[in-house]
Image 1 (cartoon, rainbow, N blue to C red):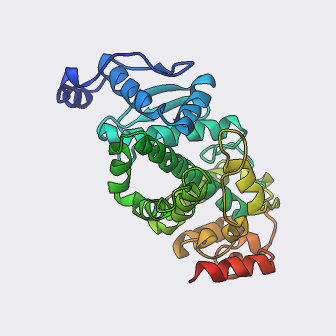
Image 2: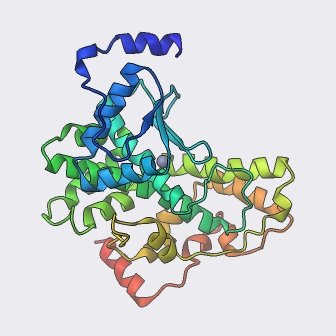
Length: 323
Ligand SMILES: [Zn+2]
């Protein structure tokens, strides 16, 4: 444990934390000192009062993920597929970390269901850029939508602090607004509409989208070019948003919670890439010797946003959206 961490921990009164019993089966292995274990156990026991939350945690604990705390600048936590561990930033307040723990455990669940690790530079890049972008963004949107859903269920059970803490975070403003709006409808937590509203609102935060596109596209492509592994990357496989939604947006029982038309995720700001980021991706694609030349691999062009086949149903959905 670092000196900074020891100092920080000394600010938290010992009696504030309860015992070490997790109301979860199987319980997580928590790495760290007594205080870390008590802090995380208290978060777990808040989450499990929600059915969606309990299941989300259970999938991660069953898969053997370990929990711990680690300082990180500018981020609240992380989930590592290879080492099977989830870390939380001890500097963040516990009410915030409740939402982060749900988000990271959802990532563990996504990995367990076969999702690829977008920060793995050894993984060949055979999907088109558009598919890569749709997929990596949906992974994050689903993790945040799941956090909102669980926090909503915890609020329903009488504990509203973790949801308020989530809503107060600047990066979550669009999600918080959309989620609260959706909750005006009484059945919204049950029928997937609140979770879908949270999912779709994730895409309204441009700096967040840019940060993920830089990390998962530009950075990975740059590393693969440097390591000479980009020569086998075909960028040729195209997946429709309907498939991505079907594989990611799952309730506990395996059904899909997404209540809108998935096709909207192939259009407009859902796939639009920041101009500078798009230019970097375009350069990297042009230098990848086996990359397929296609509209779906050129995020600079406007056609990228329109490259999906627009059905009459989709046009109707989009018309409704703009009202
Ligand atoms: Zn995430």
